[in-house]
Length: 291
Ligand code: C2E
Ligand code: MG
Ligand code: MG
Ligand code: MG
Image 1 (cartoon, helix red, strand yellow):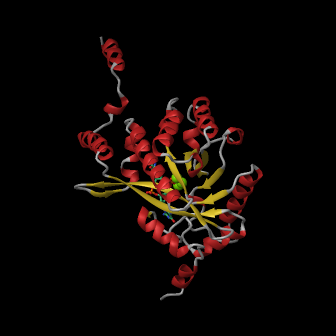
Image 2 (cartoon, helix red, strand yellow):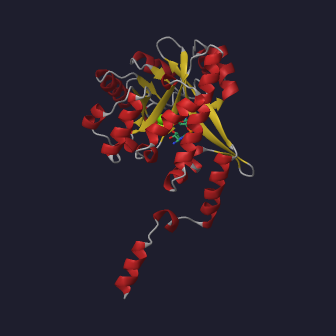
Image 3 (cartoon, protein in one colour):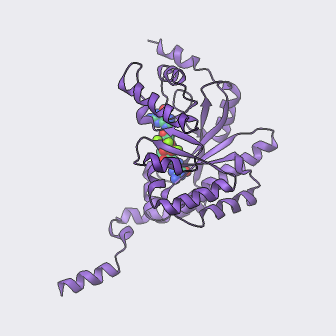
């Protein structure tokens, strides 16, 4: 009897419900509302070219302006949205918002590429690429103005499907970057198969790194690896002028981080870009000498 009970239990096993607390169920319905009623906000963080200081692209980072809880950061709802399957509607929302902005900018004569984070869930979905193309048609955005960030682990999960979806996206003119590189578990063989154009080193290897340390050696090796594979490298989490100098000396191609700017709403991003292009980290140097 005990076995049968366990068996019948398995047949209705729903992992997403088993672990969900009542508070989570509220969050689940709220997340749906957030997407439908535009409680989400698109923030942009500039990606600066370390060779010439130009800002030709930015990363889209979603924020949730909750009516009671205030600004909710992504780590409080993205993992949850992934576990419960809500992530695809969120990705859709972010993609459409990003695409609309690129169309508006083109009209004003600006060409800025936006990188959008996609999750494992999106990449395992055979229809994902088609939905991205549909969004491009709907918004009138150009594929070259959109880049998708894929984490190493997301790509490794069910590699045959995710590789197919990635190839379809690239065939449709989009480009991909590997996000949070160094924290996942992809093999070099797999890395070589992925149709990616850019490698983003996770901030764990960037923030706090000093010249002459193992950290520097690791950065140098990673940058070298990407370059051997023909990919430009972005360093995440560049927080100090010292890190900026080191990245530049190591031949890293782009940097993102609080030294440059925090993620900000779109109008602020455009104003920031007007003021700071080409970006030179002078203010930070000055700050370092303040008492
Ligand atoms: P990520 O894609 O690796 O994004 C970089 C994160 O690092 C962002 O956190 C950004 O604000 C933060 N960051 C940037 N520069 C610095 C720095 O100098 N120092 C430090 N300490 N942090 C820095 P955020 O916005 O909280 O996003 C966290 C993660 O949530 C993202 O990591 C990404 O994985 C996920 N995420 C954000 N927006 C989306 C989205 O629209 N869709 C999906 N699927 N995931 C998203
Ligand atoms: Mg990212
Ligand atoms: Mg990242
Ligand atoms: Mg990261």
